[in-house]
Length: 420
Image (tube, rainbow, N blue to C red; front, side):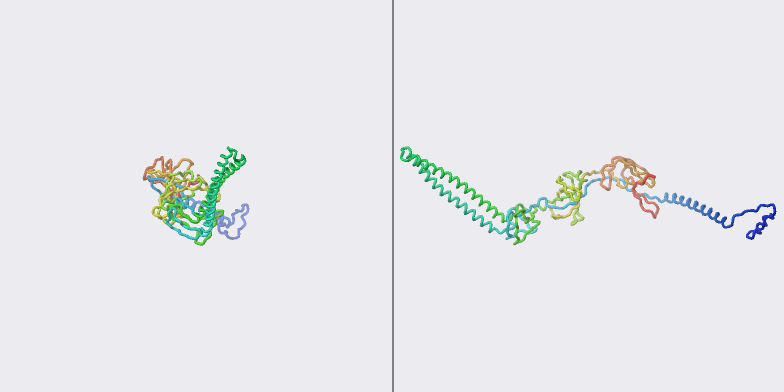
C-alpha cells in the first residue's frame, strides 16, 4: 500500500528512482491511452446507429406500404392502328385544255355548281375558225372536182360504146377502140380518186372542227369547282403538257381519307374494317368511315415505307372540306363482354419480388390486404386494357398496378426489378 500511495503521490511529478532490487514499472503516456479509449467509443456508437437504422427501416417501411389497385372489369376491347391522312373527294376531275390560246371568257369560279356539258371557259377561237373555213373550202373544191369528173366519165363511156359498135364493122381501127377503152377506164379511176380526196378533205375539216370545239372548256361531269387556275386574258400553252384549268369534285357529300399506314401495321388492315377519325376543324367530333381500298403501291419517304389506305365517309352535311388533315384510327379487331385488366397490372412486380419470367403472364391481386400472384392467359389488348382468357380472376377483383412507400416517397409502377 505504501508503494501505491507513493506512486499516486508522485503521479504527475518527476518519478523517483525505484528502491534497490526492484524493477521499474513502465506506463504508457497519458495521451496515447486517451486516443485508444476514444476509438472504442466511436466504434460502439457506429454499430449502435447502424442497428437502430436497420430496425427503423424494416419496421417503418413495412408499416407504410400502400398499394394502388384497379378493378377487373368486363366490356369491349378494340385493337386499332393509328395513321394520319388527308380528306379528299372520292372523285376529282382535272379539266384542262387540248389547244393553246388566250382565255377569252370565264364562266366558272371556286365553289361553282356545274352540270355536265356546261361551259366553264372559252379560248379565243378565231385562229381555229379560220382553219375550219379553209378545210371546208378545200372539201367543197374536192366535191366540185368529183362532179366534173363524173361528167367526163359519162362522155368517156358513150365514146367507148360507140367505138365498140363501129369496130365490129371495121368502121374504125382497133387502135381507136383501144384508146376509147383506156379513156373510159381513166375516167372511172378518176372518180375513185375524187371520192378518196373528198374523204381526206372531210377528215381535215373534222380535225379542224374538233380543235375549234376544244376552245370551249366544258365540265365533263356534274359537280363542284374546287380549284380554278386561270384568269381572263391568260395565255395557256398545250404543246407538251396539258395545263390544268379547273378541278371539279363530282360529289362533295361522299369523301374519303387517304391514310398513310406504316409497313409494320399494314398486315392487319383489310377491306371492310371500320375506322374513325378527327380533324382539327371539329376537334370534339368523331367521323365514322369504312376501309374501301388498301392500295398495293408503297410510298417511300426518307426510308419510311407507308401504304395508302382509303377510308370512305359520308359527308351529307358538307362538314368535311377537301385537304383537311385527319387523325385516323382503323379498327382491326374487337371483342365484346370480355374480362379486362389494365396493362399496367401485367408490368407490376412487388418491391423485392422476382423478375417476371418471359412467357407466362402474372398479375398481383390484393386479397385480404395481402398481394397474391395469379397466373393468367391474355388475349386481345388495346394499349390500355388486356383481355383475360384464362385465370383465377373475376369482375371486381382488385389487381395491383403500383405501390407507394412512405409519405415522402414516390409511387413505383410495375416495372420489373432485377433479381437480387
